[in-house]
Image 1 (tube, one colour):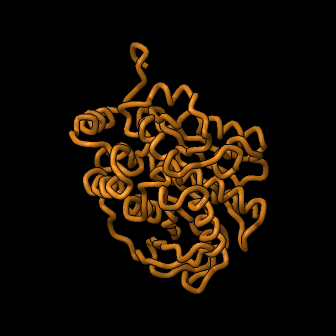
Image 2 (image 1 turned 135 degrees about the horizontal axis):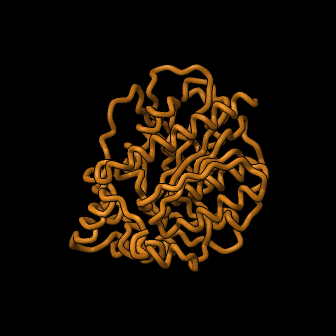
Image 3 (image 1 turned 120 degrees about the horizontal axis):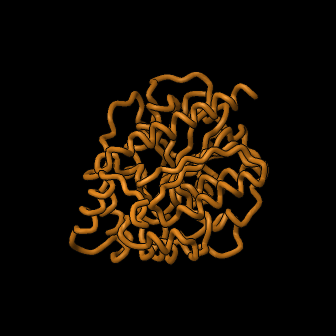
Length: 319
C-alpha cells in the first residue's frame, strides 16, 4: 500500500491505462453477439500466441440438450492412462468460448504435461441458468467414462476454470462429490471464482470501475444468465463444502471478486478440505487471458501450475 492505494504492478498499470482510454462502447453496452466478437478480438491483441503443441483436436460430447463442442490440448501425441484436466472458460456465462481461452489451455497443457479438455458450454442469454452448469457436469461425466474418442484411459480429473468458469469448476465438483462419476475428481482449481450473488463485498465497491471487470459488466452478466437465489449452482459459497477434492484457489488483489474468493477459501478450510490459496498481488480479474499485455502473468500461471503439480503428486501418492 502507498498512501492508502493498493499495489499495482507496472505492466498492469500500463494495460489499464490503455484499456480505459480506448474509445467506443464497452462490451456490456452492446448485444451479446457483438460482445463476443469484441472479446475474441481482445485475445488477438492482448493474449500470448497459442504456441506449439502436439495435439489440438476438436471433439463432440453428447449432452442432455444436444452436442457439446470441446477441444483437447496435449503436449504429447500419445498418452498412457492418467489424469485429465477439464477446463470451463470464463466470460460471465455470456462472452467466453474455446477460442478466447485457447492460449491459456495450451500453456497449461505444456506446463502440467497432461491433457486439457476445454468445454464449449451453452451461453446466455440464449441459454439461461442452469444451462452452463448442466453442460459442464454432463461433459465431465462423459470424460470420466474414458470414451474411445479420447484415445486413452482417464484415471482421474482435475476441474479448473476462471470467473464464471470458477463457479462451474466448483459446482461440477460438488455434483460429482454427491453423485460420483466413473473416476474421482483429484483436484479442483477455481481461478478468481464467482461464488456468491451478494453484491456487498468490499472488493466490489473498491474495484467496481477501471479494473477490467466492472460493476456494470457484472450486472450485464447477471441479467443475462439469470441465476436464482437458493441454488448451489448459483451461489456455492452458501452450500456445504465438506468432502470436496483438494483445492487450489487463486485470487487477484485488484479484483471485484477477490473477497468472495477469499471467503470460499475459508469455507473450504472450515469444512476440513485441504486448500491452497495463491493471491496474485497487484493484478486484475481476467489476467490469465492477457499474458501478452501483462507479461508478469506468465509467472502467475507458472506458479499456479507448479503448485497443482505438487498437489497432484501428493494426491497420487496417497491413493
